[in-house]
Structure formats: C-alpha cells, structure tokens
Image (tube, rainbow, N blue to C red; front, side):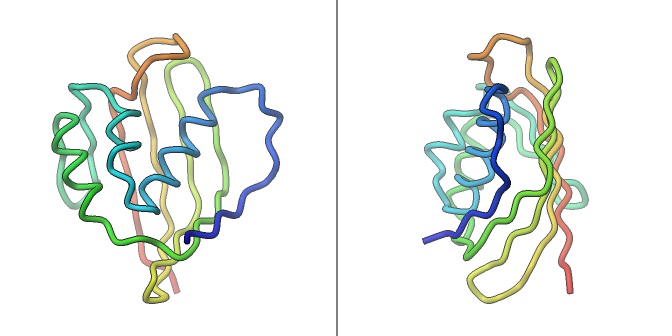
Length: 125
C-alpha cells in the first residue's frame, strides 16, 4: 500500500485531481488509470531517458513500474491548458526520487485527456 502525503486542497480545481490521480496511479503501478487519463495520441517525454508516444506505449511503461512505498506532493498547479505537479517518491527499496511533471491538455474542457507530459525525475539523498 502506497502512503500518500499531501496538503488539503480547496477542491475547486478539477485538474488538480487529475494530477493527483496520475501520480498516485504511477506510484501504485495502476496502468489502467494512467491510460484512462491520457489521450490516444499522448506524447510523454521522460527527459534524459525516452519519449513515449501513444496511450498503449504509456500503458505498457506504467505497467512495468514498481510500486512505491510513499508519495509526498509538493505543488499542484493548474492554469488553462497547462498544469504541473512535483514532489518526492520513495521506492520500495528505500530509494528516493524528486519528480516534476509538466502537462498540457488539448483544451480547457474538464473532460479533456492529457495530450503531452514532460517529466523530470532525479534521485535524491
């Protein structure tokens, strides 16, 4: 079971829920939820590693992620078609990582799926 640490939110920004759901799904290795949040033609740039193109490539990558022990959210920021989230993840083996995901949606509709993600993940001490 993944421990989630985050500050209370006003509940008035639906995209923040999308950000939170994405990070938690990644930490839990829940590829179905990850796939449901992204568009069919999503492009996910794992900076310094690889670029995933398309929902199925993202689903396959997410399915291979190990479950994390803890996720601590820093900031969840949304504005129009863009959003960002950062924080730390502790892997099951105790390794800690800092992450930042910068997202773009194709439009401002609440139901819009994620079109593009740029992720930065760094090991921390």
